[in-house]
Image 1 (tube, rainbow, N blue to C red):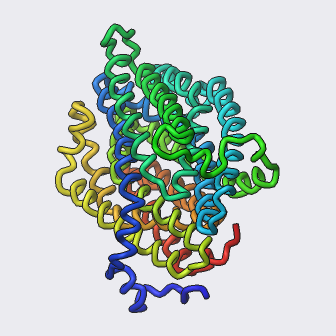
Image 2: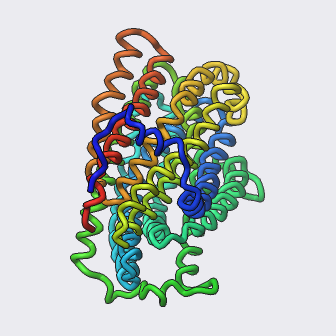
Image 3: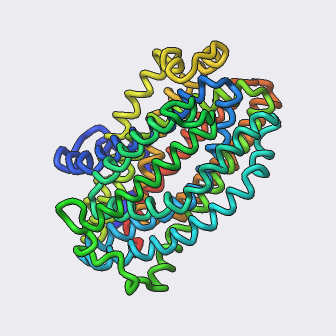
Length: 465
């Protein structure tokens, strides 16, 4: 049975939000904390890139920020395989069809191989063209293209890594997220120090060196996760789940994964494309404003850590519970994950509100960037609670298999509300540097409310995978 229609004033709605199921919350935390800590390590990769590149000047900051948007737009397509693999594996795991979990992994790896190879060629040969749409500053474009060319060579490895990580999230072994992320962070910090500034006998490569460090980190992480699956630890996941076998390759399974992954992939292209348009509009103001966007979004990525982690936990528990024919537990798992995520992200929001200047100083010593970044960071702090709801409810819906609705909702908010509002506030009403961030806040609010409504509706409980 579906939940009753949304009512903000119905007592059950607020009871669900202000009470805590201790047993289920503990289960959510058990799944979420390795992802949160792991994502903290992954986020730290971006933060160390920003902090170290920030010492090279505003142009370097703007270049890495805009290049990262293009790279992650293509990367999101490969990560859609992770979303699909997690949803399908968690459902089969809940049904105790363990060999099917391995079969899904192998077919996800096959798709990742094809997609990663294709995206490598696309990004390597199309990077400069894409950057020319984003920036009008020749120096920024040249620096960004060097960053993109270097990272494009690692897309095959990252695609295989994400597919395998989706398998582990699906069976509830989220600690692999933490282990690989810590490994990547260590390699990236050492690589950044060596390749950006020319230490340890390495060449001084600047912005391109930051990309090389990240590329090496991905290759090593993939090597580890494959070895782990083969049984480097006490447990051989290959034998237990009958994985890494050519006999598992199957057209119907590939089609099932592609069908589930495609909406998320298209969502990623459109959302990152919208963010690229956002960067291009800010670029019309000046390069300092682009640098501010890079700094503030990197800082905000810190608050994404608990949101993403609890989203993964919600998706895993929902998939496993639906597979075990327990929709009531699936429903409660989503709410518990959101409450915990709001608690953590809300705490970070308070920090952004109270001491924004101190936070910005961790990432740049440019006095102009610091002064102008205070207002955007406070805006980000104000919307942390609703941003948490949007992130976690959308992940929960995708874990249930409702990737198409999430795709449509975010594309609508991004292109139908966020971008027009950014243009109107910034260039028609002449709010200049304030307009983009007011629009950004509305993006978070509208998407969060829409995802809450859809989850509350309860139709996702009846999706068959």
